[in-house]
Image 1 (cartoon, rainbow, N blue to C red):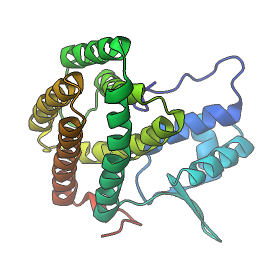
Image 2 (image 1 turned 30 degrees about the vertical axis):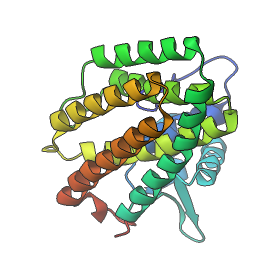
Image 3 (image 1 turned 180 degrees about the vertical axis):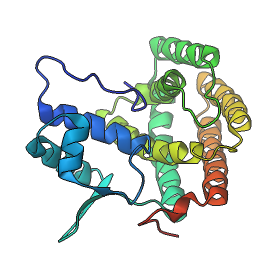
Length: 242
C-alpha cells in the first residue's frame, strides 16, 4: 500500500496501536501533519478515534524512524525538514540503491524482467497527479516500479532500508506539491522519460549505465523539489532547518 492511500479504519486482528501508527505515519509523509508541528496526544486521539496509549506507542515507533521527534518538557513534534537533509537523503539513496540495482541486474531472472516491464506499463498508463493534489494511484504505481527494479537483489535487509529512504524522500515531494504553482506537469514528464531510460538500462543488463540513470533521476528530482519548496518558503515551518 502506498503511504498516500488512507489506511483502512478497522480490520480484524490489527491492534489499535498499529492502526494509529499507520494513520499517523501516512499523515506525516503526506504532510497533512506539517514539519515542525506539535503533536498533542489528546488531539491525535480524537483525530484518529483511538486511545491515548495507542497514540503514544505509535508516536514512539515513529521516533525510531526519525519521522517524529521527542523533546523533554515539550513532547512530540513532526520531524523538521531542510535542504541539506534532502540532499543527504538523496545521496544515501543513490549509494544504497546502486548496490541493490547492480545485484538485481546481475541476479534477476526473466520473471524479474517481466514484472519490471509490467510495472512500467501500469505506471505509464496511470493518470499523472495534477496541481497540488497527489494521485494515490500514481504514487502506488511509481513506488511499485522502483521496488521492482531492486527486487532481484535478493536482500530483504537492503530492500527494507531502500523502502524507508523512499518514504522519507516522498515526504519532501509531498511538501513541494503544497506550492500551487509548482511545475507538476514538467516534473512528471521528466520523471517518465527518466523511468524509461532506467528501465532500458536494466533490461540491457548494464549495471553501470543503470546506476548512472538512477543517480541522474534522483538528483534531478531533488533539484526540482528543492526549487519548488524554496521558492514557496516551505522551509519556513517552525522547526525547519536551513
